[in-house]
Length: 421
Image (cartoon, rainbow, N blue to C red; front, top):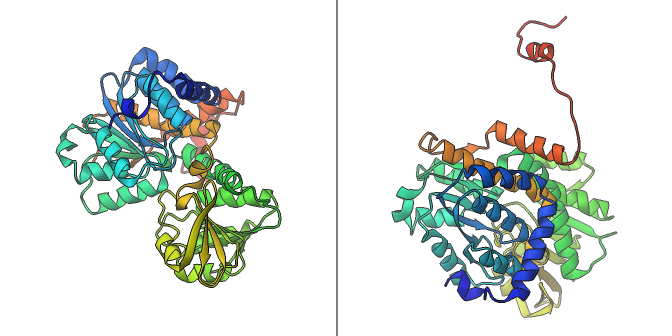
């Protein structure tokens, strides 16, 4: 199936709306704008085949258009079955960027689209969750000889890739964009925090004030969600398995307790741990009637949905993105967005302003890989410090903010071993 099968490029209604939304997002992406202007002149990825597996949103569209302006031969597919914005996908097809993504696609179609993206024989991969890279390393390994490098957008994908590297099976260098400070300190914390609350609100229209919100996982995403929920008047409970993260949650003013205890009192549960069956059957068994379950982790395995299905005597869709499970004892539990990323399933994902920095890192890291072709070790690399700082400086410049710089004397002092006097 090609993108032209999915989106009639003559349909100006869908594509037209997408173009307008892409333009609106671009206004909030000044760093990407600066990079696109330079890419248009310098063509740093001229003729490079790029297969990208990302959430197909208007922000992603602006990254795609930037890479195209840089000369790339780009094809795009979705990194999550429920995250695609169909108008953005239709507009991208009109911009002559093959896009294989439909919101709500089934698993078979999802992987068919990934394989279609790989049919382009990529030299660079761009992934969000590592499904494309995993497929390339397994069923499509015949294409591996073409690849010079790749980038990974999210925490879950980086974890998978580091496991692949540790096992000795990683076949080409990949830069962990997720680990850039200008990514995780802003995208993960402020982007996920705001968009997760937005998605749950749109799906349910609940009042947050006074609710007991249980956040499972206190990484940068969990911190952001806790911050936003607290700001809306919620009573935040954090569950953790890492003692340092748990201690930080306590000192940030949150309650911390085991999930089995929190399950008895929580009104809203949000998983953001990046692991399997974080909310399991024994937690579901003690939740109170009316509890709401949402996931903001990359994969839909954080809530044990098969266990929930087995406990239910009936299931119905009560609102868009809200499934009511009536259990054998009469309690009702509400699962949002089929357990998939609620911030993209029921809302629009992260605001463009924060994705500006994440996608600036993507574009600059891809340029870096091309410039250093054949020189990078086959491992998961951090984002080069100079790129991270460049993105931060460009963002500050776009906001009209100036900062100080070190004097020669101060630089010398910081690099001197002599004791200060």
